[in-house]
Image 1 (tube, rainbow, N blue to C red):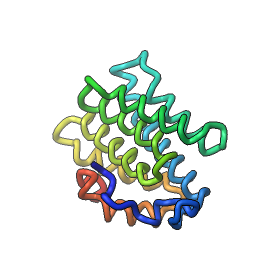
Image 2: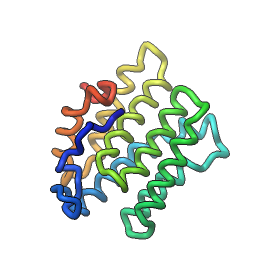
Image 3: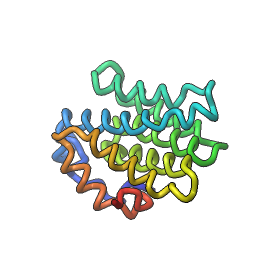
Image 4: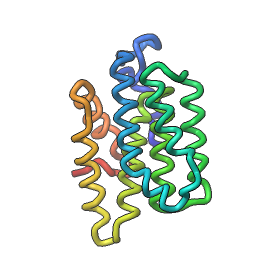
Length: 171
């Protein structure tokens, strides 16, 4: 479980009693999509005919533009996670990253799930002796992609939820 038991107000939208603006929610979703897309080839190498993870990433991007509803986007995220069933290693983690990106439309805090699974995918794809450094490099790359408006929010959340996220955000 990568979500805290109690949802933080900073990841709950204003309409639901939290402090997260819709604009920042969209930025978190776009960042999650970017993280997942970065490792999507690791899924495609094993399951080239399965479009579900790619469709989840496309769906969350469409949601940020207002072209797709939250429920449809969340469903695509679930389909991407279903694509992980029966797989292992990098391909499995890459599918979960895409799924987490998709469900970020529903719960903003899933953005960190997309990032964490992407790091796990990179680690799994690397030779054992370089897996930790590959994961750290992916984490640095992800942080470079963070929009300034949500940078502090995400970095603080990485610190707070690092233990729940397999400690992938350690430098």
